[in-house]
Image (cartoon, rainbow, N blue to C red; front, side):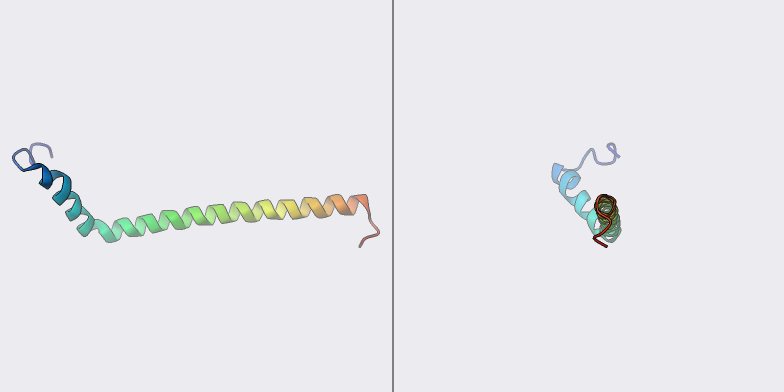
Length: 71
C-alpha cells in the first residue's frame, strides 16, 4: 500500500483515502458500531438487573429471617 501511494500528495493519503473509505464502508461501520453499542448496553442492563435482583432478594431474606411476624 505504501508503494502505491508514494507519488501522491499528503492530502490524498490522509484526507481523500479515509473519506473514500468512510463513504464506501460508512454503512457497514455504522452498523458495526451500533451493534457493539447495543450489545454493551444490554450487558450493562443485564448486570444492573441481576445486581438489583440480588439486592432485593438479600434484603427480603435478611428482613424475613430477623422478623417473621411482618408477613
